Length: 218
Image (cartoon, rainbow, N blue to C red):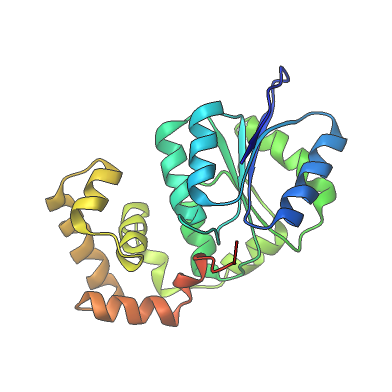
């Protein structure tokens, strides 16, 4: 993780586990002239640490990240740096994961195959309070899913459960009681038509929700 100071108003943290992707995004934003990259992170924990330290104007983060997934990073940064706007850029084109990213609190969502020429303008708009989804993302998420009826909280809890979080851990992370976690868990299982954690995991595997974990070698 590399840090640098700057006086420019629109500060950015770039979080991606691929060095070449970080370098490409860094080059595009610096060439634009409206951004300063204050940190780069190669895994989820580094991304959270950088956001806590700098409280940047924008966090640009991948979903498939080592240690902690990008979706969990979004939720944590929402807690620790609520004024930071979060743009997700991912190579994953799974509609369920993309919908989870929106539910987690992402302000912008882009695919790595999108044209980067428009990215600076999108990030400026996001910094001013707009929500931006690229046309390719809109096309993917327009397809219906069995998960569409889940509330934002239910999505968060489902994601935590399928990635190994205990009820007490989820309660602590989300700042709600264990009873509330259990109520949401029962509700989401009823909506999805599953009756156990094992069935929920089977559904998650079927729908590609575990793709958000990166297995890249460091």
